[in-house]
Length: 85
Image 1 (cartoon, rainbow, N blue to C red):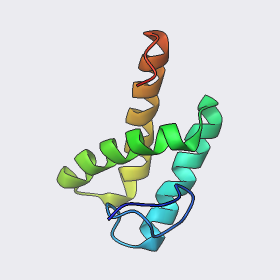
Image 2 (image 1 turned 90 degrees about the vertical axis):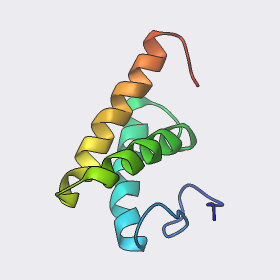
Image 3 (image 1 turned 180 degrees about the vertical axis):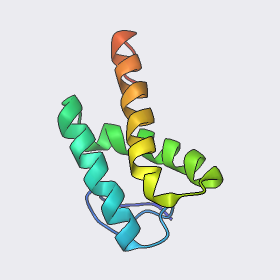
């Protein structure tokens, strides 16, 4: 089960429902805009960190913030080291 378009809500299997995905999609789009990166580049990194954090999360409402922070850190590290992937 994959997604056909990174902008379509409800298309990703890692989120519990469309409402949860919509919350995270807002965070991903804001992060992509803030970093000047395409959503196609930000989303897989965000989803990787989200999956890891969700497994151990006690309070789900903090997941967008924590996931955004880790995703931003990773993408900025890649830029500093000249590695886009």
